[in-house]
Image (cartoon, rainbow, N blue to C red; front, side):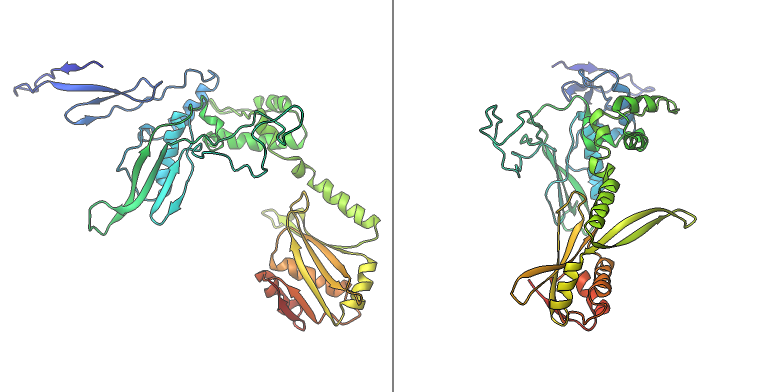
Length: 407
C-alpha cells in the first residue's frame, strides 16, 4: 500500500494548510475503483466495470441496466443508511447486488425487522422428492440426473433493516440499515442478467416476451423467432433478445393445448352419453363487445347416476366436497355422493371448476335442481365442509335444505 502526500495550493493569501494524507482503499476484486480517505471522508463515485469474463456482446445490455441505477446504489451498503419504507431498502440492496453479480431475496421478517440475505443463503435444498445425493448408471438410486442446478450454497452475505428511532427516547422512527456480513461462499456470476429478478431490468425484455409469445403460439422454433425479432424496427440501441430456455418456457404445453384438452374432454363425455352443462365467462373489449369465451365450469352426470339420485337422495341426504390437483388443467373436481339402501356409496354428479367462488356453488346446485330433482323432492340434508362460499350459497339456492357441517 502506498501513501500519497498532497500539498494543496493556498487560496488567496491564506497560509498553507498541513498536507492531507490519502489512503487508497480497494473495493471488489475486479473493480479498479478507489476511495480516498482524508480528514473528511471523500467518496469518489463508483464506476462500474464489467466482469473480465463477460461476453462482449452482453456488455452493452448490462451497461444500459447499470446506467438506470442511482450512483449511490452502486456503493457497498453501510450501517446507518435510512429509508422511509422497506421497499426502498430492498431496491437499494438489489441494485448493488446486480452491480456485483448476485441477487438478494427477502428472508425472515418480524415486527419492525426485515432480513435481506443472498439468494444462495440456504445450507441445503428442500429435496421434497427425497432423491438420493447422486445418480447411478445401474439405476440403484432414484436420481436420474447428476448435474442439477441448486441455489443452496450456505452464503453468509446478508443485511437487515430495523424500524427504530435514531436517538434514544425519540418518538420519530424510521427504517435503518444494518450490515451483518459482506462475504460470499461462492463466486459471483459473470452475467448478472442470468438471475430471473435481474432480467426484468431490461425495458425491452417485456416487449420481447410479448412478441415472442406470438411466435411461440405459432409453433416457431427459437431460431425462427430470433430472425423475426431481428427484423422488427427498433429505437436507437434497443434490442429484443430472449435466451433459448426462456423462449421455450414462455408457454407450456399445457397452456398451448388447453383448448384442445377441453374439446377432447367434451367430445369424450358426449360419446359416453353424459349430460353436460357448461358455465362460460366472456372477455369484453372497450366497446363492451365479446371477444373471447372462456369455460369456467363443467357439470356432468349420466342417466344411471340420475336414477340412483332420484331414488336414494330425494328426501334423504347427500354430501358434497371438492378435490384439488387431479388434472393437468388444475381444475377443481366437485362431487356429490350418497349411499344406497345396501350401504354402498355412489356418486350423483360431478363438476369441474376453475375456483371455489360462490357462483361456482350456485351453478353446481342449480344444475342438480334442474337435472336431478326436477320431478322429485330435493335432498333433505346436505353435508359439507366449512367453505364459506358454499355455506353462503346454500341458504339462497336451497333454503329448504338442512345444512350439516363436517370437520
